[in-house]
Length: 376
Image (cartoon, rainbow, N blue to C red):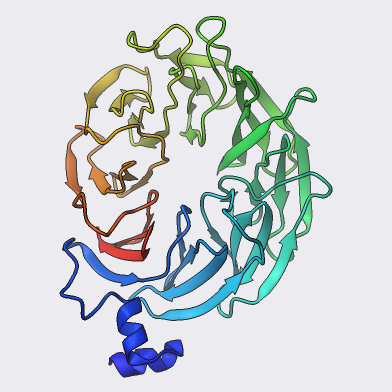
């Protein structure tokens, strides 16, 4: 079987065994199904029915068989250094790689189908992307939000989110039922910013909410990806508070209080994800995870996993939260109770960068030493 897979991948049997992490006494993490040993970038993979796509530290994209871990194709953006993107995206016949510009590779062959650039100063390949199946939505490091046609890469709309000439980062769009939500921040000096809701078809701004700080001198602005429900948008501000906003108007429905342990001018960056009636919120300042009632913002539970600052985004599948701790462990969390269901071992060679892609039975995670498939 190994010889067949090696031939399909264009490798010798020994090379394939090394790539798949076989023949070395096994991995200490019993959840690992296979490992493709090529150093991965800190970018969440993307998946389709049969393939997992991941980014490498050489700013390349690899397509790997989901079942076996065998290489299907390799491609590159032609750039060097680290990518500003945080997640790959599969839509239609392409996988889109946010790498300052947007690079779309054919899912079957790896051939470049299109490249989207916003010259002279734009950077649509920044943080993560979103899709409604018809458009790809992107933020930028230059104050704009974009919608791009995934079939050929042409611009559908471009909307200015920045309110003045100050550098503005527009990050991590999310789309739900015709509404696109982006966060924005002005990182110079004491950070400020907010959140904006746009029409997915036209790019028209439906509402904007500047997230002013709890007190003067504190950092503020929307942090990473918001979570959208049928009635609310849940977003954290850099001052350490989390907001529940009316999804139709952007008006504030509820807001949490700042943690009393924070210094007068200290920020706390709090990634958020919603699972059912609970918003799970992390903390850069205290390393905690908390479960908030989505309807009211009231805290249901809080845990301290003692894994250091928690800055990364999370994902939810079948009512379970999957996340990566800063030291490099993956974990699964019950959002209703705050119980950690499992956590990969510490202190092994298997160090994971960021939250995984999830299918019905497996997780696919980028790590320092490669791409991993793990049992859920």
